[in-house]
Image (cartoon, rainbow, N blue to C red; front, side, top):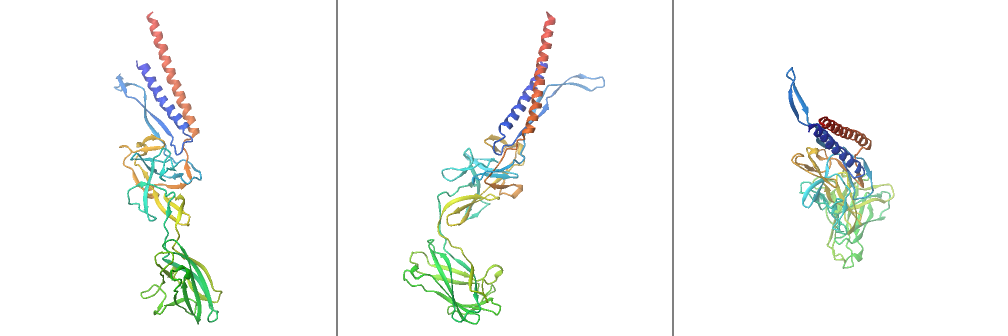
Length: 425
């Protein structure tokens, strides 16, 4: 009987609404959970006649759940201080892979497995772009993000060095000023290079660069020597390397911008140490000057380093994963990828905060953070659930009253039916 069927459709729809609200409230503290809402639609109508004006007389058949929509609004960001936690601020999803199947999530509650792979709470691998020698390739296929736990970074021999210094223009002839800088060979062994400046005349200083004699198998250090010439303003203008010609300091054709330093026969068995002493700094201005002030070195830089053990990692706002080593070096080891779908409501909910694409959602676009309208990331933080408890309780009251009304309708029709049966008796 339609009298019973119609309220039963209401009870079923109301039950779906109550279940959805209950699920939202149960997941108030679930990381990156997105609340849902139920929409209703009336069922088809049966025409039982027409009015005198010709208007159709139709009787409804009840109600149905037309859709359950997910609210993809941003949840609050809560700091955790855990390096493996990542919050996504803005549009998009993290790309993950579970059993070879690509899925998506906003739950950044990641951890590391025994192999150093970054994984989700249910074991899916977090995917991203690979990095080779510290350079991320966003055109390469996605790969699992692996943290080099327990690895050792290979040493890098010094190939360039720079010294920012002033030589006292009032120094007497023959005055020497030693300056030191630590450099590294191919085995990561450090060597102290001493640059000795000697006042050789007006606006002229000789230089001699040497390593300790004990650093060589021969027990003898052969220094690299030459002459620096300054103008009347104290700017370095010319260099003479050993017995070579005088060269102008600059970047034009034929000019000199660095001094070659070569040290062979290191006692530790490392490769020959070949370095360039850069004479120019930012703006291509010389870093060595000669003015009436105490001779001093204000800064030294060089690009070599010893080997180092892995210590920690961090994730930047663009998703770049950087490992830090005990030698103070940092190296990019990958970049988290993000994805988005043309129709978010078409995504299939898989549980554990994971989603899968469907024909309705469309093909996802995958890119780096900030591209294609994708959001940014915050390391050491998690996105909270976006469930609004006040709104949920309001909806709960409405759904409860609707359920009670449909229940009352069923009991009313039951009473009417019972009265009809009693009329027969």
